[in-house]
Amino acid sequence: MVGLKIRKVQYAPENPGPAPSVETTRDFMMSDKPLHLEASLDKETYYHGEPIKVHVNINNSSNKTVKNIILSVEQVASVVLYSNDSYVKPVTLEDTGEKLQKVYTLLPLLANNRDRLGIALDGKLKHEDTNLASSSVVRDGVLKEVLGIMVSYRVMVKLVVGGDWPLSSVVSEVGVEIPFRLIHRPLCVCLGHSLTLFFCFFLLSEVKER
Image 1: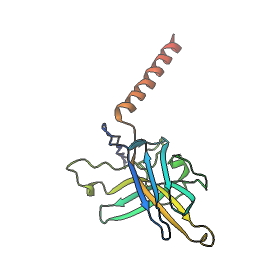
Image 2 (image 1 turned 90 degrees about the horizontal axis):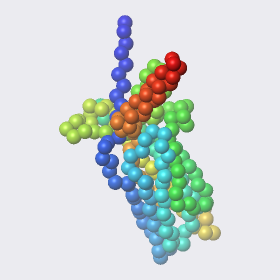
Image 3 (image 1 turned 180 degrees about the vertical axis):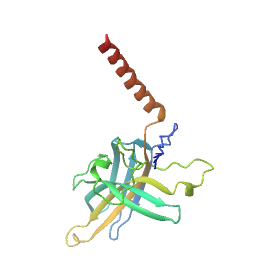
Image 4 (image 1 turned 135 degrees about the vertical axis):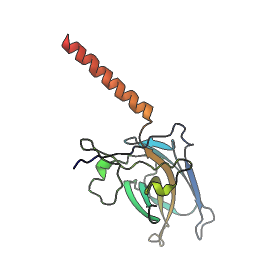
């Protein structure tokens, strides 16, 4: 019996969309002014192994205190072949503590999630390692049911907000989610790197033979 493995690889689109940005305003009881949270990314599409910079801007005019900021990258795998079940798994998590910063860096990698169950991965060949599943790209005129499983990613920014004594034990959460694409580099770039490596190897072989 002969087995043949076929791996489908999706590459980044030639014309990526605008950098995503999300904001929200939260009012609290017994507070005259609200808390405003804005979060954005540098771009819409990131490549596997590329750091993700998250810009966080907090304007807290309320009488509440931001006790913690939690940032995470979540992978959402939706089964569309037979149902609309969705499975959400965090693949990166950073707890910043009480210190407020403006820019955070997240790096979702398979190496940090190998022992976790329920993570969607790209297809693996015999002698090659794989990576987290790439974001699903649905072309015009193609039914999403054909893909079987739709994979998407989002950055979650969550603020843990609390009051002063005697209400210090009462906390609430304010959060936003920023969708983005995690995918392979464009095919032309990958081919360019492969041709460069092949050319260097060819020159090295020529030198050794001489």
